[in-house]
Image 1 (cartoon, rainbow, N blue to C red):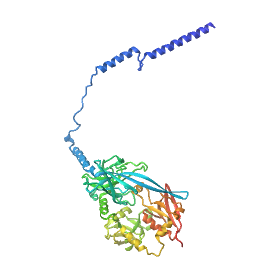
Image 2 (image 1 turned 90 degrees about the horizontal axis):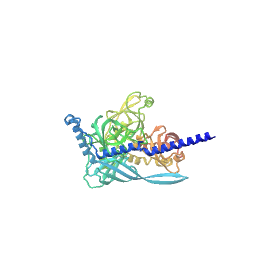
Image 3 (image 1 turned 180 degrees about the horizontal axis):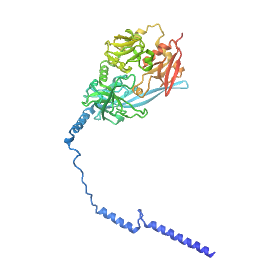
Image 4 (image 1 turned 120 degrees about the vertical axis):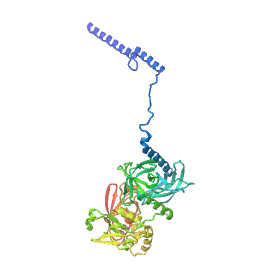
Length: 507
């Protein structure tokens, strides 16, 4: 018994001695784990070094890797780049807009209207000493209440809208301030070739004037079936660059930056592909807006289709370029000379027609009042026609006057009963892959409401015929819904819907 107690006592004594040793050791060493006597020696060495610091010897290389004479061309290019940027940037402005957007909501049979403020940013370029500047139409959105322009030197001015061209996506503004202002001149975009060096200037992400350099990657590019031929460039263009100039090495405007291609439609960023509107088209529209208050568009009265393999098979036209006529507008210059649906336009004033976009562009660029020569294929025969190019807006107004006395059902009454208010797609919407005509409003108790058509739907086809223009859509609806059931194809989100609109006029 005593031996057991003795062992316990010895173990307690050993434990106490070990515990005490550990405590003393922890107090003895410093943060680096050094015993106290070593710690004191180290501290003294550090204090000595701080008191008696000896600078390190070093030598910086003073000469560049190459002599200036060895890179004389690059040095001159560098100086010229700087000179070019200095001459261009003062004419580029940042644009800030404040607007108001309204939306109608229906809930439990009652209609409410919601209004909220919107803001936007973009770029522009001054083209006259008086302060006229050019930007994109989509920068000056519908409902814009105020426009502020910031110059390179920091001065800010209000600006007013003179006119715009939705088809080309161009708007003309006037700075409300005392000039003269630094302006850039237009270059000849018809002379631009792929590979030429260009500079894009703008206000990306609201950062202020930014310059990027690249080349013309391609010409005659298109981002929609309504947009004219565009320049493609690899000069970096980002959100906020819209409306800024694309300039050549002489500082001339050869394009207006309009859009970018981005595989990410939600968070768009530059992916090496940007688009610009050629300066000759811009200058033409600019002059027409300032001289006549609106852009002038050539018009023939045709709606067509590209020649897919299916269209070729249906029409028996296996080989060759061209565009198939889908619809000839009643009373139009095309109808006056005898053009028909399913004719194939092979050439326009001697130039081969390769796509619907190219064909529309050639018509719109032709001077109003000029006769053009069309080479047409019809039922394996080659025919020639010479229709007159007319002003689209004037023709439409005159045609409305001619149509008022028709004994048929009034188009307006038909459309009122259908109940659709529509608008065309913007360039950005088309660039992001949207196709068709946008439903902007459902009017009252109507056939569209009973079919549960919704605001935001895209009408893509009527009776099997594709539609891309609001006027074309309404004309088809008015003609069809008055006398028969009308098949409509809608896109809602990712879904395609086929609806049958009943006849809206009494038999």
